[in-house]
Amino acid sequence: MRYLSTRGQAAPHDFEGVLLAGLAEDGGLFMPESWPSLSPAEWRALRGLPYPELAARLIHRFAGETLSLETLRDMTTAAYAGFGHPAVAPLVQLDSRSFALELFHGPTLAFKDMAMQLLGRLFDHVLARRGERITIVGATSGDTGSAAIEACRDRGAIDIIILHPDGRTSEVQRRQMTTVLSPNVANLALNGTFDDCQDLVKAMFNDAPFRAEMRLAAVNSINWARVAAQIPYYAHAALALGAPDRPMAFSVPTGNFGNVLAAWAVRAMGLPVERLIIGANRNNILARFLAANDMSMRPVEPSLSPSMDIQVSSNFERLLFELLGRDGAATAETMQRFRAEGRMPVPDAAWRRATGLFRGFTLDDEGTLAEIRRLWTGQGYLADPHTAIGTAAARAHAPEDRSIPVVVAATAHPAKFPDAVERATGNRPPLPARLADLYEREERYAVLAPELADVEAFVRAHARRNTA
Image (tube, rainbow, N blue to C red; front, top):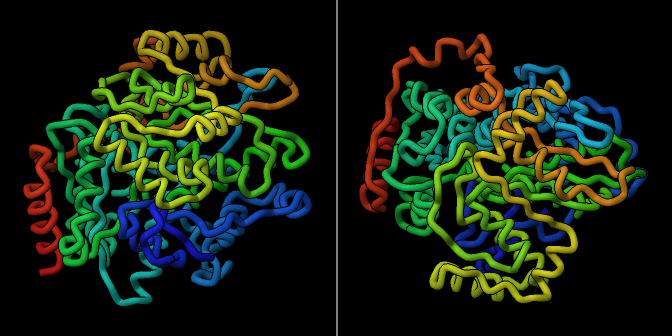
């Protein structure tokens, strides 16, 4: 399996290469040269497998010769052993056709654990074999950072620095990052938005001398391995509900497009996905694009669903590459114009192809509270704000054929957003026992302006401290 850049100018990489590179050298994102396709019979043969086994078999299709199935099986077994539910990603029925795919039973109570717990082990395996070390830099709107830190803390060959927007995460999200005092971990709060954090991470990767000096690696979903590790849970849900002999729809609350891209990928691999529904808060660039081909930047506004407070959806570039017929030059030009002009000029034909499969939905904070309340009073289901946006989106855009089930990605435990859940329901969800003392733990982080030189100096000092 080889991987190509969406912008067409970087040399092809194998799976190990894209794991360590993260962002392509030309600024693009890596995509499989061709999609591994499974026949209906091959999909049926995967039904009923334990989640770690299913994950190993599907990710092996993307790893190619760089990782044996046995090695991957050992990694997935270890990655999911500590999850709080024996099914790892259980399905909970909400009504006659809707199901919540609970992705929050990992150590940091968010869907990012599903990929990060595996990614940390992948890094360890490859770095040990090569005798190398790396510096991971990542941006987070709330959940990626804590999941990445938990996966990489105390690993001997990794330094990790996470950037988050100061004051724009929930307190639980912030403390899950800043109370990890391991010497290989550093947290940086920026006076800005998630988009500022994400732009700085990309700028560091595009600074070729700095990238080489620091041996930079990525854990954001710009890293293809992250997306590959998210694909199995959509396949798991679809197979449990009758695929490939029954079509599916997925509703995914998303800001950076990585989670819904993984759902799109199972369709590219041969599962019958009838519709993909994108749930957004007031920062609704993806919903605006699907409604009116309006992919235009606007200021990021804080919301009750901070993990989606994003106006530049990095992973959309991967879908754009497909919509443009895998034309790297056209993708590069479109992305450059987007950055220069603040609006992405997607050709009408490509936009119409997107709207044939995707639907977008926007829900403001009051609507989010109302949906949390509806789920609690009507179904007895306690949802976090992001999941509630997903369930509302599913009701708005479910396929007309009621025999098609709709799976909602339940992306975070309600205890990560206790203030919003309590406002909606009067019920303040407690943290699990392993995190019960989170509010008493010591925090450690720095605060900086979003200036590249200052951030690079911070990264350099942290990495050098840990290698001295």
